[in-house]
Length: 327
Image 1 (cartoon, rainbow, N blue to C red):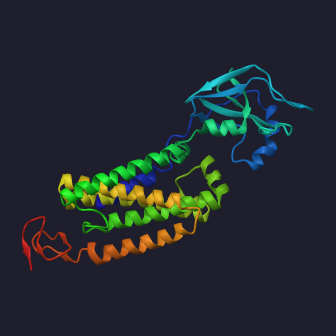
Image 2: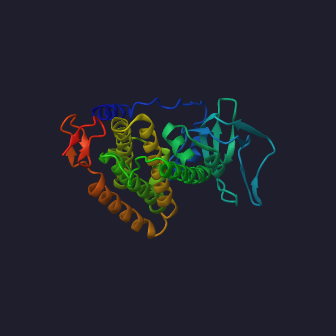
Image 3: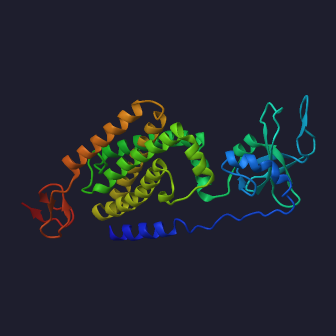
């Protein structure tokens, strides 16, 4: 456990020390930036903000969109920026006549490659040039959710088959005498519920965090602060659970136990995420937390210590670590 605490402390120290994304600096855009003054007040990004393209490509219009009584004049001159290209916001303007999207954003890859695009196209095909924002973007995509759903179901079925053929330790069923796996699942449920709550009921808070991410929970609003604390708690508990599993079980059994723990975590996250919009989610979270704590304190909590090796034991009898009989 001491190693886990040391590693967690190092992670906390390094949380604000990752390399900042490379900034693209443009010359000669001060005049066009005047259109952006009002937009920056209502948006979490503005002139000088850096994005990275995550789609296959992003289409840009070279000429500035113009106001016309019939609508918006678009030219055929266009260019493309490719996946992983880093771009910077050079200007923003509003075209009220545009029925597709009234906000246009001028972005630039370098001094010679720049053009205009609708704001919704930019936000759909590019993400903030920050590792936290890019992780959020990848994690939030729909295909990842369905992949987790399928993978979680297959993993649980495989583990159940293995469990019926060979007795393996499983969290909540035949747990090891350690509090960390149980509390890991409890904190995961709380974290998933907070994540869903922020996205459904305080979306502006999440948007601000997405465009200006940080791993420091103390600088955020209360609900976001609580969510970041649960994220750090998950990292610490996961490290401790892995360490305890390999201390208390043989290597093969420890791997099977950790895979079972991973499957339970995936299923719990999906259940909370898919029901987050309803009152059933609150009942589900409360019911699971009470059930998990009851199972731990009633069955998994270590009540004895071996008289020979002083390892934790759930029951009297033969010590599974040294073979000594404890009466």
